[in-house]
Image (cartoon, rainbow, N blue to C red):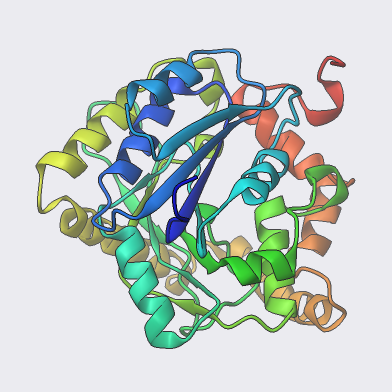
Length: 320
């Protein structure tokens, strides 16, 4: 067996082969070359295996699980079980790394003596009626300081952590066990165990979340990802332009609160602060009380996301 790589990247995937091709290629373009990529299919029935094979890269491996879990926890746990790297990164199959993502993250881990780092993400907002129009972006995963705050949502695609921390926190818990998503539960447990979790401030990930696109799993095409991936590869100024667009989006949203046009959201934010603080003091994820109120049962959040994207709810899937 070859010597262990510095970084293991894990992609959990299900039947989005054309999007997966862009995610895999974004890992292969990394300036840091010493990595392995474990693509773990959640019982894929499309040509995901062929997409991985087409990369022709011995550092990229595909494993297809025999039974469908319906969410990320099982594929990611299998990836962690097989990971050989000293550091571990995750990439959602609908997202893409900028070429400097791994190199920048590892440098920040070393500089900060951290267990875990993440970067802000440039999130491509769903296209409007004119699908060919220029993409609009917002920034995500930005805390109040450089330290992790459980009240913010951090996409797993931006995480890089030590293998020691991954082992200490343990498995991703299944969605059926949780009011929040498995990724945010894992982060909360890492924070609770005292991990040093630091923001790397340069955006190094482009997120194109399927959960924000109604019926996305029913669309076998990849036109939006094709355009974005081409822009990332061909335009040296793409990231700066996307960041400028995200700044405009953020300022417009901030002004909507300043000028009182979103008074309902402002009132909810006021209620969130004391409830979230009390939940964290009790060792509960700060979003769990609100998710429980809105969705009712554990697992219903992920079921709602599945229904939005065109998949059956967790409890209504055919038995396998």
